[in-house]
Length: 197
Image (cartoon, rainbow, N blue to C red):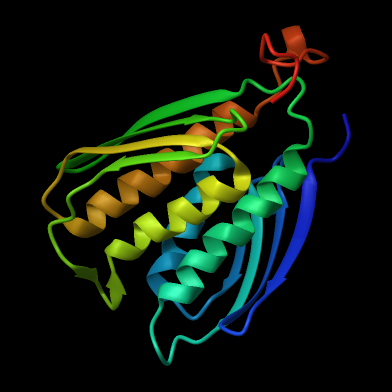
């Protein structure tokens, strides 16, 4: 099987970002983004998805975290799309229910080739540390649009906003792990009746 790796660099007037991804990694994260809580969440994706991520972002965080968070999602989506290639042999679908104390989230993903984000989360605080909780939607929207996936995120329970976020990102990592694994019984087949994704 060919290595499922990719590196994407995306530069704008607001951010300069490089993302490297290994879909068959061991869960290692290297991150320098200027947004500490986002780095904590990226670590959940890497660790629970068994995906190696190396992310560097030089963004205009002196203004706001918005551009950095959104553009990291965009660049990650581009890197995942490049690394997964034609999607032949992948499981395609992945889902996870993840609890953390009182919080419980469900994340379901489909590498469908059709971008769609359906996120039903009512964070109990407007910010976690210095990070605006509205930016999680921006991150996932950026990822979805550029990885061309359908993603459903539902926070089912929780009153601690940190726990809510952590269950979402852990669930996202787990869902990615299952969707991206190679189905040994159909390793040379496209997981779609259309013949392409």
